[in-house]
Image (tube, rainbow, N blue to C red):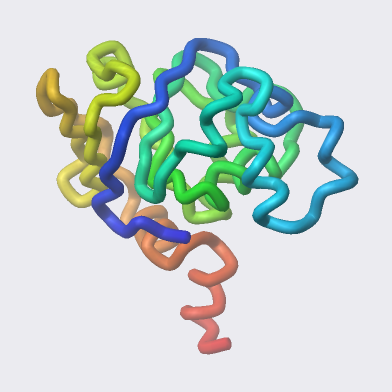
Length: 167
């Protein structure tokens, strides 16, 4: 579920060290397969209101080391299935970052934006202009590679590869 180059929505803000078990509880890893069931348990231990109230295009904002922990893919897919348009954080765990790209979820490293955003703010990520627009101002992040933008626009690595291979 790609939101293209301009995801825009309400900010859901969390702190440092939010790990994959917090994003998607490990107790469901081997029992839930249906996308809607996975989505229903996103962030349930940290923010029980998230899954019921998040809207397509909303932006998750995190602190340092967002997505640390195991390589659990559901930590990304539960956000994607809920329609999250992007995650902005101060830093990301390498595995979460890669899983997000593979699933077409924009992940933006922009510490200044994280500090300026409040929960509930209307936030827009402009991947083409490499900026995050917030009520507190516009914040620039390092440009993403053209290949990375292509993958995000396609909705993830598999759809991107299928487009390129004509499958």
